[in-house]
Image 1 (tube, rainbow, N blue to C red):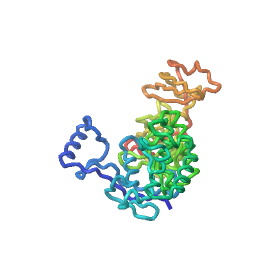
Image 2 (cartoon, rainbow, N blue to C red; image 1 turned 90 degrees about the vertical axis):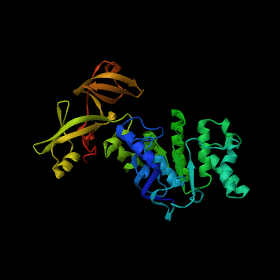
Image 3 (cartoon, rainbow, N blue to C red; image 1 turned 90 degrees about the horizontal axis):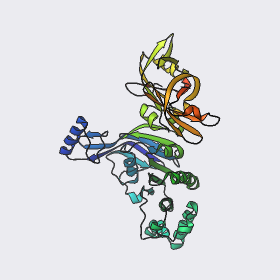
Image 4 (spheres, rainbow, N blue to C red; image 1 turned 180 degrees about the horizontal axis):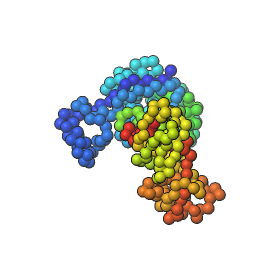
Length: 397
């Protein structure tokens, strides 16, 4: 079994009392933070809390992606699973084995790093074979495992080359090959594609998906790129300031974000927000008013709000750019930016001070209508709106 269980995991980086006072003072004054210091992380008398109250069950052979902005604790969590970072408190189980104190080499885990970490003086073959030689496997078994992994990753033709003679994509394949050749229980990947250009990233995402189907093991993947998270993960774990914000399938997180942070982080282009929107009850139904237009909330919200007898309040309303539709009636603004993407055009529309992004398919579209400076009229289906409490920023359903 290669399941992973994390219970109440916490990671604190100890610092001296003087540093605690200094950092707290800097944070309170809201001045520029010290180099390497992430201002949103909690500072306690024990030190800087990088990960807190982290609870997650990763199933056997599941592909889970930890995603979030820089400094949110995702790489620290991965390194605690690997044993490269000590767990301050909480329990880690790999399979059914309590693993907090097990040495990294004994966890049967392989890790793929952002910078490849290949031995520059060794050929591709020797890089991939190195861990097997340390394990003192027979030469013929080592050769079989290396060549099988190379065939899977389509790098058989470069086995005799040194890393300096390889492209970024080839180096990343070698790093992955070095990981899978050991047949580990779990493969951990820490932003493995961030050093590649956009085209190579797309290709390598496809390769990782194919690889997962071939080797059928448990993957834990860290990225700040939500496109990678959406395309690779069975489930996504969205993190912020050391806390888990939401866990779910890519579609669940996209369609039902639990708060404004998740809604804004997941999805490209970023979701549109209308702030300071009044929500009121009329004739037993709940309505919102955007730019003077009254909109009845759909039945999902009606049932929950009625059950809670929610009072009139101010809310934040979100609508994704792909759900904004060009129409003859509705809201009107002026196009300030028009980005032609081929099959679609991304419009930035100024609507009484609100910057609204719309994604409009170009098939059968008169492109003269979406030029900079033109008035743009649009609408959206109320069923696709996301409504958040203005104070807590939590989704109302």
